[in-house]
Length: 239
View 1 (cartoon, helix red, strand yellow):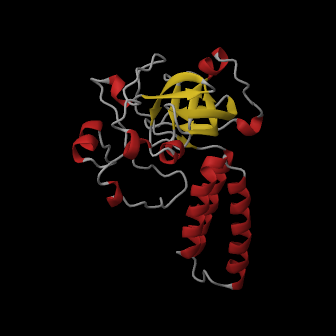
View 2: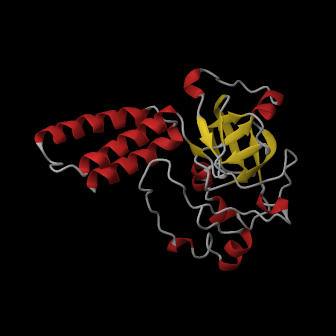
View 3: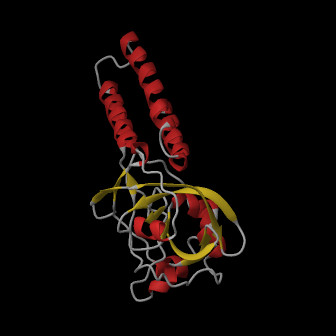
């Protein structure tokens, strides 16, 4: 990441609260590209970034991270809670962390209820990862759905202590089978665009086939990732 905005800067400038309307969304030029991390973490105050909530009717503290493409819970915690984990092959996803390290998920915890504080709730999926040092990591999808920073940053729900480990910066990117195939298809598109005659009949037919292939790959992505991938594909087609 060329720039990471810390908690003190975000709070003092009210970037995610008072002045959130100034933030503009920009689509990455490639699938799986790094994204901005707005992360409330202070190494001298590990409680400042934890968010109180409920997972399956039991109180937990979670770490919200806008730089993560998915929401995660550790395998050890899922087993302790005796959650049913679907570990069939289609639920194994390769993840890349902010430091470049990679790890494959154990499976998926499907249709589990997540509740923010004592109010808002939703049913969602969590990827299960062995050795994750926090009990719950909330990815960008849930952070945006619950308006975590702009509406709740100053509320008592922030500041819970995570007994499952010390919060850190994750920036999780999904690199699973379909994500790699999407990247390959996009790379193929840019190569074709630089040929002497990119709009020949042959190239037009190839692009039509590629669009169908991309839509099929997108439909195989986890539901929280499909909308973003679909928007990226629309942007690619209009360029």
